[in-house]
Image (cartoon, rainbow, N blue to C red):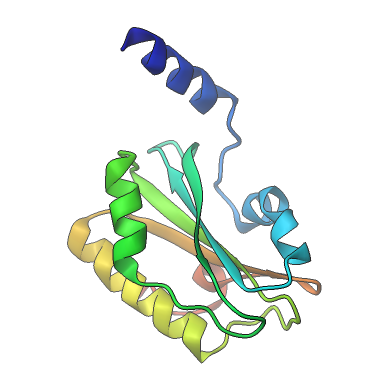
Length: 140
C-alpha cells in the first residue's frame, strides 16, 4: 500500500542514526530502570536507522534466556539490514557476564551465516554502558 511505504519512509528519516554505543545507550536508557533483565533488538536499515524495535526477552534479576531464532525471524520479517542488541543489568555491573558473552558469540556466528550484520551488544546498568563490540574480541 502506497501510504504504508510513505509512513515507513517518514519514520526512517526522523529516526536517529545508531552508529555508536552512546546513541544506543541514550535511546535505550529506560532499560536501566527495569527490575528484570530485558533485551531489546534494534532492527536497522543499511544507513543505521531504526526499522523496528522489539523486546525479545525478559528474564529475572540476574539471568535472561534468548534464542537466536527469535532475533533473526524478527529481522527477516521486518526486512532489516542489520541489528544491535540492548540489554540491561539492573543490579550492575555494566560488564558482561559469561551468559552475555556466549549469547553474543552465537549471534556473531549466526549473523555471518545469514549475512545480517550484528553491529553491537550494548549493556546498560546504573553504572553506565558497555559495548561488547568495542571492548571484546568476539567479532574477530
